[in-house]
Image 1 (spheres, rainbow, N blue to C red):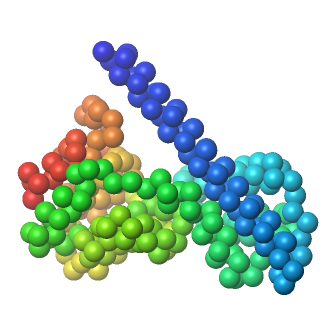
Image 2 (cartoon, helix red, strand yellow):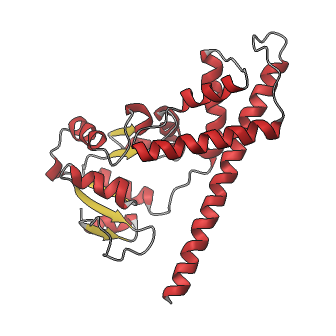
Image 3 (cartoon, one colour):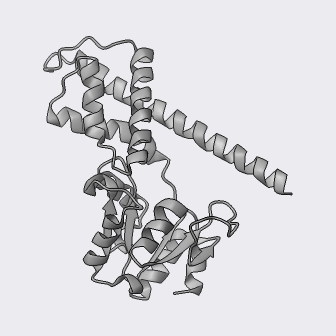
Length: 245
């Protein structure tokens, strides 16, 4: 059973990696389409000769991948707009501020479309809201926060959060204590009054415990109890929170 479970786990990881690669390429292709249309407008100030599509996508993907991996090592937020500018400069593409904002939006669309809710999320949020418990969202992101807020609104859950904070807006990622402390200050609660729920041991559980929060791990894969970072509680489903609040 253990070997079988490990094989299933590895298959899921591989498929998830493939899906992310597909979405990255799809997003970059959307950027290329935007630039192509822009370059064909008679009134545009964009005076460029676009490179071939495959060359553009390949170079774009390589740079984004390297920048993202380096940002994780540094525990610093990737500044996507600056990365885009560096990529465009390498192709001698100059965009104004409005065009730069639009191209980021084009890149984000493919990622946004994959955002889905688990069936038990909305009922759990309603339960927490009805109990009068303050609720905030902390997320590691590379896109500006307003895009993610739009996703939450589209999914019908934005109204249940008293506060949302994204690493792309504050310049630091979980598990850095700063991003957790900002939320505590905004909600006017002390760490010992706060519960943090996340599905990543390093980003979520380590970060929350570093500032004194109770940290609950929502399992993505079976938790063995042998990991170096130890959560205060482990749940299998978000709806399990109702048993402890």
